[in-house]
Amino acid sequence: MSNPSSTLSGISSIMSKKNEIVLFSSTAIALYGYDQGMMSLVNTNKSYLHTMGISEESPIVGIIVSIYYLGCAVGAVIASRLADKNGRKPSIFICLATTALGNILMFISGLSSIHPLESSNWNGHAIICMCFGRVIMGLGVGGIDAVIPVYSSELSSDGGRGKALAQEFQMNIFGLLMAYSINLGITAALGKENQWAWRVPIIAMQIFPVLLIAVISRLPETPRWFMSMEREKDAKSALKDIHGDEDGKSKFDELQKAQEEESDAKVEYKDMLLPGGSQFHPSMVTVMGQVNQALTGYGAVSVYGPQIFELLSFETRKAEYLTLGNYISYFCFMTFAWLLIDVVGRRKLMVWGSIGLSVSFLLLTLFGGLNEVSGVPDLAIEIPGSIILFAATAIFGIGWLATVWLIPTEIYPSAARAQGSAISVIVWGLANFAVTLLTPIGFNNLKYWLFLVFAATNTFAGWWTWKYCPESGGRSFEENQEFFESAAKEGSWAVQKVDDGKFKSMPKGDDEEGNGERAPLLGR
Image: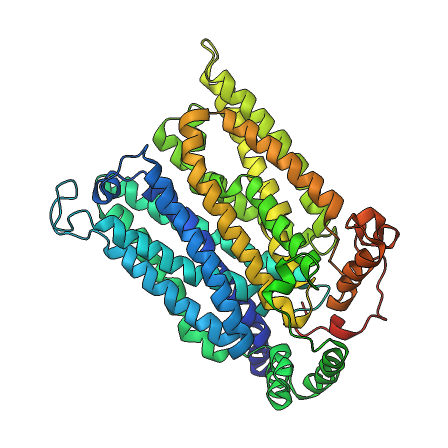
């Protein structure tokens, strides 16, 4: 017979504050993925296109998708300021409420009780409501994407930051998979002419913000933010809530030491974005990380997956089911991301990821071209083309999905960490705005030659990362700042030339002599 006390202890461990934080952060990150999976089939729904008054080939399809990313960019700035001034938790709460409002506006756009392919009483204003909804939801999701990585990173150990964030981004893919599955299932049941085939997947997204708003009060504010506000009593209380009395006290002493060693200088955006600013170098690493991620082309693949399979000669319904299979594979292979990211390091994963993606897109160009050659059997294109696309998606997930979000949370001092994460989201938003806006135009004009463009952009992304991106894994926040201090002294940003290439890879061995923010707050 089982011991009741051991059973309760096991339940308590599962429902510990640490696990609640991980689950909350992961679910919040899933919002970003859900939108990508949701819009991939909404874009081809005949009722949706009629309600918006556009055709499937219209560039406005891409505009409606892409303006969401502009909202994300603005939301990141607002949320980061709130996170620094009022705390990480209040900022996250406001972002969740904003996301819910934008989602409702999208759902009601053009809502009518008459036949979906007849004129409604919205008189052409449905598209305006949809665009407002997309922008407002972007404000919320962009803010979440800016603050959640900071919130998670400030509560993670140096050796577990990568694993924690990669696990959260695996939930991002779960959100994408969930949205696409709901969308595909309802579309198969109701058809592409039914308005509920696109409205239900939109409103189903409400599950995430409503659930998160309901439980956010259970979670602690980060002790690091309390210390930055000189609220030591609250920091002690938060640490006690997470770790218990004894461990909480020892971790407070370590955190207090880190706070004393860190500069009190206030960091403004001008210090981060203007040449000569104190944080300009790490900001350029952040900016180029997001630009290079967008250049991999996988923002386009996530949103326009079915259209890409159609370029490999699949008919529409098969292309939709293959896209679902690709997302399932994507989710599963993300497990390797959190297994490798703190072992191999961020930099190696990105460089090898770019190489793998470049080769994959070159092969996809070849098979796309063969599709235009008469006499080539469809299976000779469909089977290897699908395998390559599945492999490329997995490579992106392992090498590029979480890494560029993690690095900005590791290379800034506390005074600039939220702003650095915001810059990451701003650039992500602007870069993905451009990619998702131009991709439909590329499909319509370049066809399979678009793959060759992505092969070239991946080559550039890999080269830049190898040349200029330092390895930030396995080091304390202060140790990572040493790279930028040394780069300034030596007058070079090239990783191989700074500190004799010390930051080309993860630190060797377990160096426990580091101080400052090396102290773990959430053991993994």
